[in-house]
Image 1: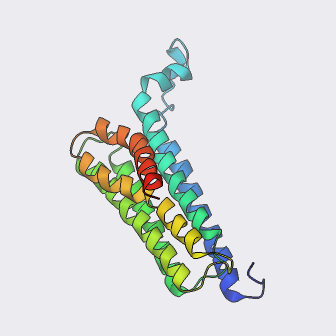
Image 2 (image 1 turned 180 degrees about the vertical axis):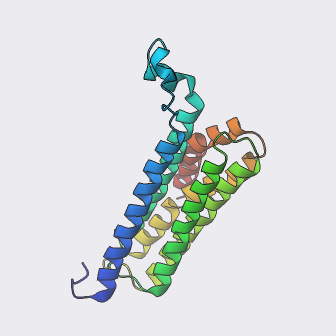
Length: 206
């Protein structure tokens, strides 16, 4: 059942959702602009293939864009998947949603502070922020179910399945906290490999 337009909690949910979408959009484009090779010096003009040569020479930065923007999109998608099953919100749900968003912003801060992954603490902090944000999102979803903030036709099995499906992101991030101390390449590759592994494990367990 959809929330009525005169229901304050339903209106607040819509405003919260819009606010989160805007922040994620800013995060997404900021990551792209931050990691794209600098072009102000016009050095690329003297290269054989112009801007394309510049991008090829800076493959690591392009990979950072794929990972950074991809993770931001993954958490935005997680948020959308949960919010579409809600019809209202309350103060507790809003507070946890904003804390989760702050942790994602903190991840971006650590990513921008060390774009080349020179230190081992930076990738560990990035993964740690995303791990806490992911588990907080799952906990907030479980709270929403118990508090009756979800749509009325949401069954127990469906709610449980949604919980399981949203564990992939934080589980991946937890493992990557440790892998950050192994090396930047292992840490980077793990973001691509681990989600598939955890998805397979969760499906097999189900």
